[in-house]
Structures are given as structure tokens and as C-alpha cells.
Length: 198
Length: 385
Image 1: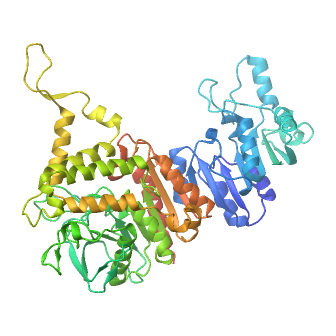
Image 2 (image 1 turned 90 degrees about the vertical axis):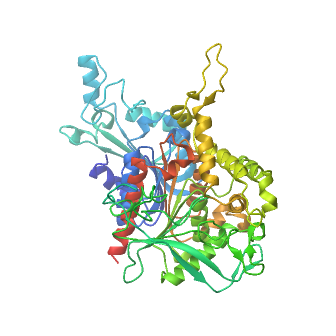
Image 3 (image 1 turned 180 degrees about the vertical axis):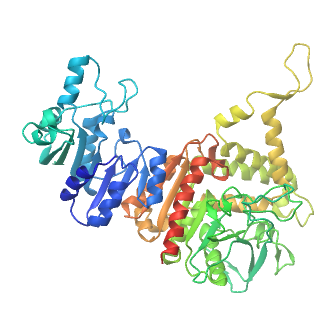
């Protein structure tokens, strides 16, 4: 689900009237909002049947697709921005998906849950079990989120893959995280939002 | 026919024969001086003519898409699941038009009609048709019905090909294109199956080089065999397995038993073939399968589907079915890919189904939900104007 704060942050990096591809577009809210506020135009890829129906009802251009199969149907640089919100951790090969995003899009926006947050750390440390949090409420064995990473992990991948980080923003809802996230994002942010390019 | 007509049925319907006197120049270069289209309509056209939906039928379809012809009618129209009050194609809100295409054998001008030049049935002399000829005749039907622009044109299989051709030929005459279980062109395998079916018809001694009506006979065996071949390709292996498995209809494998053995699937296929050959015309079958084979959406656009779809200005909904191997999801994905590259609005979904190609004709909750969501949007556009 898209949180208002995430949406506001993403919006500032999206150029008006640009061509957008939204990977894992859910019920189409982001595309519909960006169409209204920025006049963007584009497509969303989604795999969940009910979410696809919601997109159809909203009039969002939704294409049923499995992101793990790559984006071979799209040519290089065919979108101004490729967006993926809260789905990277559910990919079989997140690094390959990132590579595909940067091939198809001139720029990318990625958001993911930060597993380096102190709540996750303390959950594991104190209980010795895989963290089950409000934001990530699945048990380890049935979670769709199979590739968790931290802010540090993600930046290391960007360095390794020579991905340019244009902007980074961090979101935290609760206290004290809200005040601390700026000082120590990997410890206090719930969600990381990156604006990337090749 | 049930004793009581269901509330969500369009009820008793009466087809109308609409005659056209303006000559129709066909893609093959020949001309039909005049022709008749058998048409059914459901619902009412609104004041500004903005709520009309055209339904294009497939290979063996016809104008009778919904409702019943009489209280004695055994079966409702072929798309009765989807057309009616409160159904996806809601006749309370839309004016639905479904013609039998020319070349057909259900009342529109075709091989069983009388050729005015010879006073004999056209038979094999009926001009070969292409999908664009149907589109042309449907456009004239729209003129006659006072429909300048269709709210949507909808079709499955060969019907979907008509929808796509419409979008390219008359971009300003439709706002939405709904393309179901279709493809931009047939594969070699598809053409091969069609040729086997045609050969079955042609090799029936009763075919008489297509002049069987003049000889007062019918190539029923050949047509039945053609249908059996076609029918197998419209189903999935899984469905046939579930439905028939290796069940026997008669005979037994017990030792000492020599009564002939018949599998259920054999008897089922024979029944399908018999029923079809009693209700369909062999020359129409030849003509329709050839139109299918010849169709190639992008042929005139340098074989570039992106270039082809650049000519369209409507929005698209593309639907495929997971177990359809005759018009597979891969073929639908090609359509979608080209539409995206051509910057067209498109929604695409591959519906999970084990019913094969026939799924587009059959009930399926998810299929109905997607159609309903899309059609509701069209209705909202009309009422917000």
C-alpha cells in the first residue's frame, strides 16, 4: 500500500507529462495520482488478479506481468521514469530487476522497507526470531518478501553496479524514528526511497 | 429454454434482416452488388447515439448472441453469459448490436444465398472474404443504425481480429476495443489445423467441389470431421482429461470381451461433429477459416505492428486465457507489446482457466469481473459527457 508521505516524495522527482512505468503498480493509485497531479502517462505492471481488476476499474493502463521474468517487452530508455514501490524485496533477483529498470527507464525510483531499522534489529536480537513487524506482518515461511535489505545493503549494491544515486529520502512514522532518521537512516527509517540513474 | 425466462436475460429476441443496396467492393477485388445482414440488437440506443457496442462473432458464431428466439428455444445465444440486464454488457445501459457476417450461413448473404446471376446458390463461387470486408459491412450497418461512433467494439478469436481491424480502419468510429483470445495473425500451426479441417471437407465425396446444394446433398461427414479437429484445438489437454479421462462409453477391457470399445471422448467428439454439420454450411466453414488464415494485422504496415497500431486512437482491453494454446497468452502479449510501443492506452490480463480457447465463450468469475470493470468505465464516460 502506498503511504501518502512516500507518494509526496516520489512526486517531486517525476517530471510533468513524462512517460512512466510502474512495476508492481497494485491497485493503480500511484499512476492515477501522478496522472492527475503531473499529467504523466504510462503503464503499470501487476501480477495480482484483484489488483489488476481494480486498475481496470480506475482506468489505469495495467499489464499483467511477472516482474521476475524481466522487462524484455520494453525497449531501452523507453520510459522517462520507472517506479517500483515496496516490491524490490519480493523479487527473485532484485539486482537483475534493478538492472532492467535502468535499461528501460532513463531514471528510476525505488522504495523498499529498511530491514536495518532498530525495531527489526531488536526483534531479532531479543527474541532470536525473524522480525514480524507492523509493516511486514508475514511469518518467514509464507512471506512474499524474500530478499530483505538494509539501507546500507542497497547502497552497496548501487556502488557495485555503478548505479548513480540522484536523491535519497527516508521515511519513518513513529517516534523517535521520525527525528532520528535524518541522522542515522539505516537505524531509524522504515522506508527508503531512492532516485536513481545509470 | 427454461419455463421462465431468467431476470437477467434479454428474453425473447427477434433477428432482423437488413438489406444493403450499395455495392460492396471486397478486398479480393470482386463486388457484392447487394447483400443482407442478419442482425440482433439488445437494449436501446440513447439520444446521442453514444452507447452502442458492436459484438463481432468468431468462426462458427452468428447474430444470435443473447436471449431466446422462442419459448421452445433449447439454448440461449452464444454469449448470453455476458449480455443482458446486469451482465457485463449491460443491456440496461448499452445498445448491443450483433450481426451475422457476410459469408455466414445464418441469414446474412453467403454461400448458401442465391447468386442473382445464376439463380443457384453461390456455393464455392461466393467471393473469398477478408476480415476487412466484414469491418466494411459492419461500418455500413453502423451508418444505417445511426451510430457514428461505437462506445466499444468487442470480439473473441476471429472476432478480436475484426475489432483490431476496425481500430486501424476507422479510428474515429470507436472509443474502446475489447480484444479477447485473439492474435495479430495465425501461426503456421494454426493454419495447418485449418487446412486439415478444410481437407476433411473437400475430401468428402458429397462435397461435389462445393456444389453440394445444387446436388441436394451435404458433405456432413467432412464438415463433422472438420469440427472435431477444430474442437480438439479449442479445448485444453487438462480439460479433456478432467471431463473424459479414459472413461469408456461402451465395451470393456476384460479378457474374453470382444465387444467394440468406445471412449467417452470419442463419442463426445462425434456428437460435436454431428451437431455442427447439421447446422453449419461447409462452404462457409472454408471461407471463414481462410479469412482467419489470411488475416495479418500489420501486413500493409510494412509488417510492423507498432506502425499499424499508431493508426488507432481508441483505448484497448486485451484478454487471454492461460490454457488457450490456439490463441495463446503469448500472442496476446504481442498485441499488448505493440500497443505499448505505439503509446496506446491498454489494459491486459491473462485469465487463469483450464478451458482452452473456448474459455472466451464460457462463464468465469474473473473474466466477468474484468469485463464489468472495463464496461463500467465506458458507461461512466458516457454519463459524464
